[in-house]
Every structure is written in structure tokens, then in C-alpha cells.
Length: 390
Ligand code: MN
Ligand code: MN
Image 1: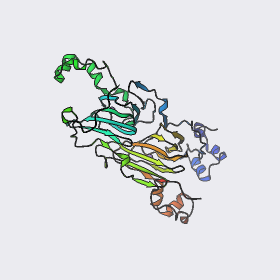
Image 2: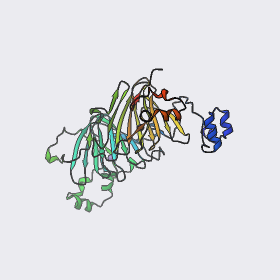
Image 3: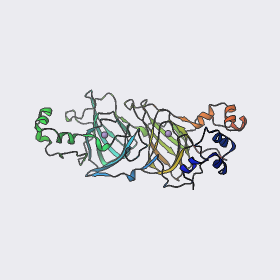
Image 4: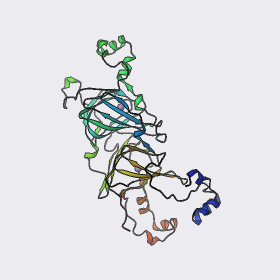
């Protein structure tokens, strides 16, 4: 077996012996593609290492009474410069305590269960809202918030628009209070400092609690709901952006969810054998969480570099901005993938659309065949496809 390094070292003469075509050899001899590699024959290997793949199961869980969290930042997953992610589970009533994030906005997707958030914005307006499976929240950078699981508990994925952001480095209320003189606590709140004395003296992070009363809350309970911009979007209850017998795509960008200025979220569902076609995103990095099923992705990064790996439930994938990629369902059940892009405006360019909108005479020259060969190409973007019958 040749490693990539071996292949990169190969001379043009060596390339000839491993079957490169005449044009490729000519390019290599001419010196303008010295790092050309032979076509990759992908051999399925579910353990294949890829710089674009991370297993959440390799992250250490931060476990506390009431819940746990594990994260993927650039420390665990170096390629993921643009976006970090957290997998979190809370038991019924447990609270991810009041906190904020100095260097990242938070975008979340509810995998299962139910949760309630509270959020305060710099204008002093606030929102208290409930979330179920398929719902999305967005908290702008620096806004104070909390998350509490409702009856049955909650499992959700948090993402942050900064790969260097660690969920374990948030600004938590208990941490701050533990590091503030009692007189100042009293002066700052107009309450006796003893009101904080039973709290964990240091960052609590997650605390056990009681399932809260149903909404709406009485007005005198602090449960106001006067924020002009909603932080809640029921992504999977809205009509899909694309749907066919081969799969579906749901998208929530700042167009549908105005507060989500820095993140677009996508749910891609592919039927067995179908592929989310070859495409790239001109304006965003892509972070993926595989919810269910089995997938395969190749990420193409030019200069003859491409990596293929297989992904299953709880795996994380990452595609840097502009890099070509696809996701193929290689299992026998639906493949469901959460895709998070670090731009509030959704953009993609796909291969089928490019072919559809390029004159056949160019394609015939580019691919060394005849204009007539291109007559049957699809007239529009395929998005998700199983391909033509052979
Ligand atoms: Mn948060
Ligand atoms: Mn994509």
C-alpha cells in the first residue's frame, strides 16, 4: 500500500508505472502539477483516519449530578477552526446554569426530549421558551442564558461560531459570585449576600433542579417574554427546502430566523444509496454531527488531496470553507446529518448545477468526449440523488 507521502514523492516516471493517463503525465513532466497523485481507489474502512473526522466518543465527558457534556474544539479536532461543538444531556429538571460566552455565539439543535431556555439581551428584553425535537435556538455572543430540561430530560447539540471556543470556559454565574466580595454582592443586587451562600462555591456548570411550571409564567415571576427577536425556531416543523423520494434538506438561515446572523443550520436526510451531491460552500465552513445511519464523505482540498472516511451516529465531520465534498448513505437505514455553517447566509455550488449551466461544447473539451454525450444531463441541481439507472 502506498501512503499519500509516498505518492507525493513520486516522480513523473514513477507516475507512468502506476497508470496515469497521458495528459496527467505530460502535466507532471511539464512541472506544473508536481504533486499529482493517481486516482484514488477507495477501499471501505470504517476506522479510516481522516483529518476531517472526529469521534465524540473520544472526548472526555464532563459528568455532574443532573447531566454531562463532551466537546470538540480545535484542541480535540484541529481542522475545525471555524466551529466547535458540544454534545450535552440533561436529566429532567437539571439546569445548565446562567452563563454567557465571551467569544462565540451559540446555535443548538434538539436531538431528543424537551428543554426550556431563558435569555436576556443588552436591551433588557428577555425570552423564556420551550424546545422539542428538531427545534433550534440561537444566542448572540455575550447574551446571558440558561437551559433546563423538562419532563423526560433532553439531549442536544450545541455549536459555536469559533473553533477555539470551549464550553468549559464559559462565564458562569456561580463562578463569578464565588469570586466577588460579599459586600459587593449585596450592593450589586440589593439583597443580603447570604442569598448566594448555599450555592456551589465555584462553577456549578450543571445543577439538579425541578421540572418548571408550564408556560406562560405569571408576570410577577420574572418570566417575561418581551424580546422583539425570537431565539427559537422550529426547524423540522417547517417545510423542507428540498424533498424527493431520495431524501430531504431542511435549512434555517438568517432569512427564516433573523437573529441567527452568524450561523445557518441544515438537516440532511438521505435514503439508503442516495448521495448529497458533490458541492461546496463559497462563504462558510461546515461542521457536521451524524445523528443516525451510516455515511461516507470525501473532502477534496485541491492539489490532488482528498480524504475519504466513514461516519456513524455521534461522529463529527468538518469541511473547510470552499472544499469540495459529498455525503453518501452507505447503510440500510436513513442517514440523518446535522450540518452547521458559520455564516447566516446560505450558499452552495453543486456539480450537477454547474454541468447543467455550462455549454456542452466546453464540457466536451474538458472531459474529452462529444457534445452529444451531455444531452441527457439534468437541467437543475440534484441536491440529493441516487443517480441514473445504468
Ligand atoms: Mn451557552
Ligand atoms: Mn455541504
